[in-house]
Image 1 (cartoon, rainbow, N blue to C red):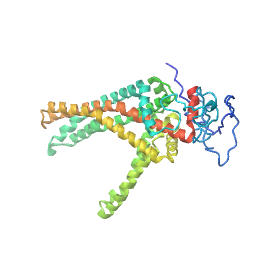
Image 2 (cartoon, rainbow, N blue to C red):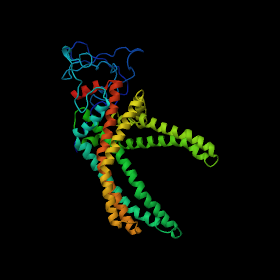
Image 3 (cartoon, rainbow, N blue to C red):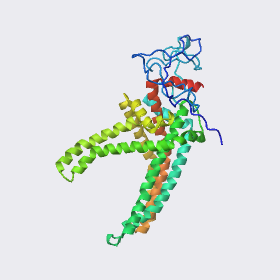
Image 4 (spheres, one colour):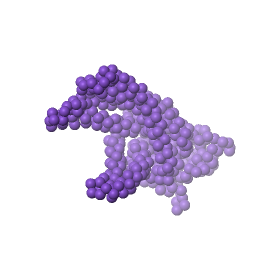
Length: 419
């Protein structure tokens, strides 16, 4: 068994915050570990933590968790020369001797705050940077899930359709129970399998994106070795997030639905207030908790701590994050629809040929529906192979962008890339 590779460095935050200062301003002097400076109320971000990770028992190298130091405004922390070795303290974009210097770019994106185009381009570059993991792993996972889903549909749909086609006065309780079981096996189980696969796959791909930012190309085994211990927490995070959303919907919409049996006007007023509030709450939670998965995986946080971390990161950037996530979802939906449409047409043509082009009997309709669903699953596999890694890459890069803007993460990443 090969030794498990260490994470790219420092996503895990130290237990105690440590003030961090730049080395001396003399360009010729090498970086040192200075004594922590005193902090006061005007000191930028004194509550953030050091990212060097020297006390991390897991052996992570420097590079990722919360950092201290000057905010990323007009300075690039210590401005690195072309070898990232000397800290000059010069303004961002100014190298040794006053010449202009681009920010470091060891991987798929430059280590500085990213614009919308750079986020989307960085996601595409990540797919090209490590296609074996980003595309190959996605195709393998979705193919397994598609095969299982098709098997459940083949087993469940015939029982459901046979009861639907039977006259109501000839259906007994045993047949009804069989129909319910067939519906669960044919529709609910495949939906749950696909949702679970997307959650786990997105988490694994986030780890691959964090490596691509540092210019590394881990193998599938290395990425899985880093992510597998966090898969249960990732599933729990997804379930908790969904539960919070559903509870919010019930609290806001439930009273209006309950009033329908008592008072029509009161129910209308309650629903008129509750339904828009429910949409607002859903949007709020969707954006505020969007980066809980990256925080859980890359900073090794608990489920609750990851939710809190995501909530804090989005503070002050809610509208921007919402715009990026919505645009990403639109792009993924369009690409997915374009990829799935040929398979939907093919499935419809085959089903029409099997059923004879008419409604037919249950014996004719059942194979046609199964074939349509199976071909549709094949289209879902192809579409998810592209859209799932793209969406995961945008989310991970946006998480990194927020941390570079708020915490100066770019400086720590440049050090990790050098190492």
